[in-house]
Image (cartoon, rainbow, N blue to C red; front, top):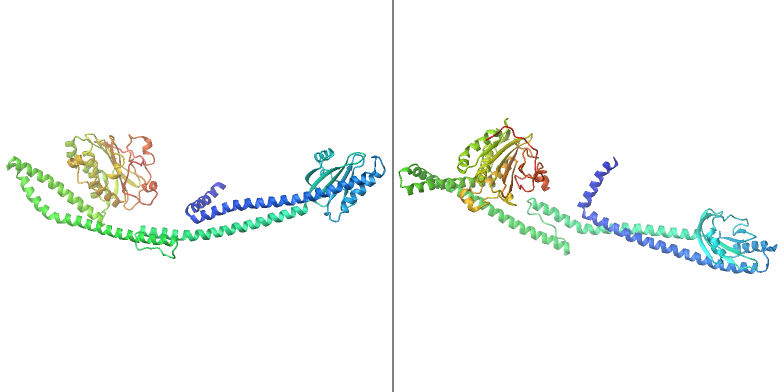
Length: 563
């Protein structure tokens, strides 16, 4: 539950991190500065604490040596440990050492122990205090062996729980071992160390805030022009070619803005020039196509007359009349295609959509190409549903697309069967045309929709058309809001898929039929039901796609396959 609630926040933070250069720079600066300031603060606090502790040790060491010499002098008058005055001398010595020094720090505890007369005395009270646990066995063992030793212990000796520096030293006497201990509270040193740490922490935080503010300001100075350049570039890409950046100053950013404006001006000139050339080219194509109509009609009338009377001509003249008739047919087809392309380029193409049953449309296209298929020895197999397939389409344009696809498949089918499949679902209809000819090489599935492109120019000049059929088919599919896609592999043939929305104006999301044929490997068909733009990462729905990077849509099992 907690992970589910945190996931949107994590996604939002990740999106901000990826999109904001200023956020990344400020964050990285703060992290790096925090590590540096934290390391410096730790070093300063540690060094300060060590200096204070060393000074306290030096002070206690000096007092301990003085106290040891004084205690040794006082205890030297007693030759035996059972001397009745030993106890009194120890008490007087402890009292003097604990309170006799005017420079003594308040709260210091002085302890002397003897094997026969253990005694504990404080500097602030004549009463005995319990130092059990403050003088550990390890410390007592070291001092008992004749060496000075020290420890830092925490305990309560009447002034609350404090940290004490415990120093011990043996005192030479004539009757045995006597040990002298100083227990000095480190309250002053701890307070000073805490103040130093607090000061360093506050200074470090203030420094981090200052560095973050400076990083944000400096980054803003750099990022703001970049953001302006990005917005200006977006407007330029949207067609607003008069957009420019404001040049302010003479620094590097101003040079960037000036260079950007110069680039935008050059692009505007080039785009305007290319648009003018394209407009002239389209107008030239349209004008030439229209102007050629009149002489073509006259030549066609004469050619039809000659073709009708060819039986009475000399065989060579009769053959010339037949060739003239065939070439005029090709010329007229080329003019028709050019006129159609010019309409698409000019934006004059209009979709006359109406509810149409596509089953008879497909059959009609197959019937018209039966003659060509018989001459080339190609069998056309139909796989059509038993029920009507109704969609809001322009039947003339759909028939033209299917005629182009099926005609290419028959011509390039290498005398092998061509399979035409029709399928539909709730939102789309699709038609696939599969041949088993030479196929397409890698990358050619993207080129087949280019104008005047031929996979095999030498062969295409004998059996191919104008090279505009698939280009017109793409425009027809785009006019419907659909897709026209190609797949092919060398020696395995090719398959073209036309997908159209069942209702005019709807947006396609998947295709009822697979683009990659079922006899291909499953890994080549995975994921083919996705919208092309979902794989490309944009919002456009292209009418033509490459078949090399696609995979399957939902299967529709066509019923009632016929031949």
